[in-house]
Amino acid sequence: MTRTIVAATQENMQAARDLAAQIGAMLAPIETSTFPDGEIKVRATGAASRTVFFHRLDRPNEKLTTLFLAAAALRDLGADEIVLVAPYLCYMRQDQAFHKGEAVSQQVIGALISQWVDHIITVEPHLHRIKDLSTVFPSIKVTSLSAAPLLAGFVKEVCSKGETVLVGPDEEALAWTRVVAAQAGVPYVVMKKIRRGDRRVEITLDPIIKIAGKYVYLVDDIVSSGATLCAAAALLKERGAARIEAIAVHALCSQQDLKAIKGAGIARLRSTDTVPHETNAVNVTSLLALALGAPTI
Ligand code: R5P
Image 1 (cartoon, rainbow, N blue to C red):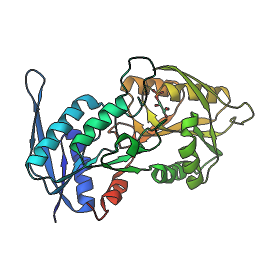
Image 2: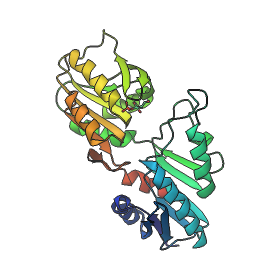
Image 3: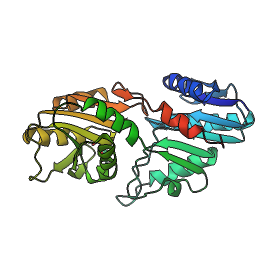
């Protein structure tokens, strides 16, 4: 059976084409346009019984509408099974009502997406209190891929000189900083973080840990405002780090935030291309292709 991959936005087209080439599928673009009042019009140009929808869900509000409309159009064209490949999955961080009256976005958006697709393949979803992606999407199949081997390979390549230490900027980063460090064969430490607001964090590091003179590589899953990286870099500089670089799975930060990150002393921030971003340095296509190689696709 010919596999079909669809993608809706221009920024996704090249990555979708690469993925299609790797798994031997054809690419059928989803055409979109915007009416004068801002509503979106969607037209699917092709579908197969099993259709793979490549859709990176950063800056997600409009992209979610496109997803729902496109999924409906794909069903009309005969897609019995829609596999959403969303290397970055949105709205995962608001997993509880932190203040009275707040919507639990993770559940709401999870339920909406579940209505339209049969399977989600994603990379390093930001799960905190909810540990398992299938809790967010109980009615559909989920595949959660780890970027750790790709990051480890990259870190190994760039950290070959000097005395390197990987630094996770908060305790949430512990599990996978440990994995990346072990696979890359470099030591790691993890900082402690208290978040005071969207752009206000406090970071501490056990004073016994020696940073002076070291080449420090910060690793995080998401760079959103960049506040975490900036606070971490300030402390590492204070402790005498020889050089600070950073790598993230999902880079969501703006140009302005990027400037602040550089200003904070991070010589270079690199990211995977789960989100299209000027810091992209690690390609995840092979990881996605492997997941799509499963016999059910
Ligand atoms: C936190 O839980 C995450 O792992 C990241 O550290 C966080 O999302 C980064 O956000 P920001 O760049 O806004 O500090």
